[in-house]
Image (cartoon, rainbow, N blue to C red):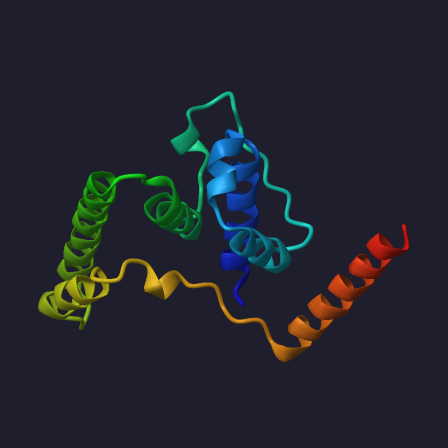
Length: 153
């Protein structure tokens, strides 16, 4: 896994730690654990509260993860979700146009078609990678010993 994504996990976890508990509780525990195990060890990210939130120089992966969390877990009504999807679609189209206008070999129509196809099921490309068999084994061993300690008390 690339370091950029690992850093994004660390940044998202730091942001969630500074949010109201009701928002962190809406994010599934499995997703939080996955990000905790996959984050870049030793990477120190500190939010700068002296400047506005969006000026903290977040990576694009961090913003994508936050957008996914917002859409899937924090938007409470379908109208909110629809409004968020429209914003994401507009942003994606702007990026596609900018990318197509630069001298690349990708055609604008292909990009727009891809965006439209992926927007039917938002953020599927952002799914967390599956643990390897070794990581699963380590997790189960740790879980087993934690559980045994609890039973002995």
